[in-house]
Image 1 (cartoon, rainbow, N blue to C red):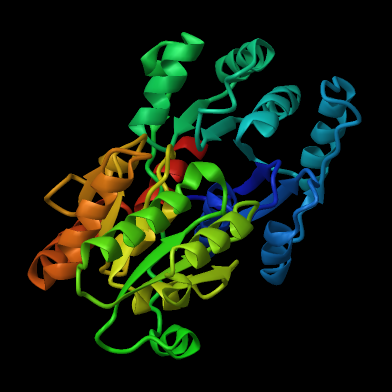
Image 2: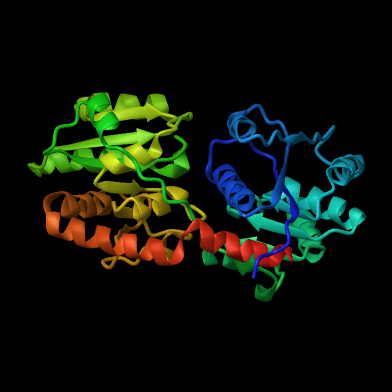
Amino acid sequence: MARSPLKVAQMLESGGPGGAETVLLQLSDELTRRGHTVVPVRMPDGETWLDDQLESRGLPPRRFFLNRSVDPRAVGRLAAILESAGVDVVHSHEFTMAVYGAAAARRLGVPHVITMHGSQTVLTRFRRRVALRWAFRRSRAVVAVSEATREDMTERLGTGVGSLEVIPNGVPVRPGDAAGPRAEFGISNDEVVILAVGNLSERKGHIILLKAVSLLEERGIGVPWRVVIAGRGEQHDALAAFADESGIADRVHLAGHRDDVPDLQAAAHVLCMPSLWEGLPLAVLEGMHAGNCIVASHTSGIPEAITDGENGLLVEPGKVEPLADALGKVLSDDGLRRRLSAAALATARQRFSIERMTDRYEALYG
């Protein structure tokens, strides 16, 4: 049965590019396709990627400012923005919008939904934990993107496990063309391509990946390989220096931020996610949909998508040798790589589609 069209505010404090920003964008696309009206609300943070993406879709974001770290008057300003847009429901992503969105939605008498994309840093301060408890109690629903995130937040906030539900991220299927990246990086047909996607921050573990492939070289694996890392961040120079010092710089490509990730996925054979912690990373789900073999850290929400030995390989986060062992297996065993890839693709189609995710959010909106 078709749902009545809604005006849905999609609110986020950060501009990306990153996982939460991409989820908001893809959810907005699917809601719009289904006939709903999306009203983006953003707190300017110096990053414009999400703003540019929204504006290119004809969805210019409304601006919401805080004059200080705790700004009670901002609730009124946000409520005025939402009221002028005539929204039916407010969907807040991450901490700041969750708190101010809950207060503003309550003032307007409209439903409020929160999505928390991770919990490792947001709960470090007592004041933040108090504010989130308050916001959770005043919202129609609170969503975590993985069971691991829900369990961590429940334990640290003491809200009761029943107060949070899990809606796994879903991604749209976007077929890519391998020809462009393979030509750009000079990749030959016999080379196995390992792709990593994510901001170049310490927690993403890209240095662990480079140390692992360097160790494989020392072992004399004998399989030609390339590593492509798509992302930008403060670790760029350290990664480049390590690749140069290790003698692997000619096979490591620090590709920066990319808008052609589907093409990179199509060119790759292995998607490696060596993170120290995650929510439920979109890059893993995109790699699964692209039919790549997944090698990732056994941390946070990743094991909820990947079962070790069944549809990918999982290793202890932060450890070089286990990651090298896993990569060595899938580089040298084409049959194993293809079997894991096929199983990952089947899992992605069954559990992690954008349609399935949007169905569940629609049910919460009412």
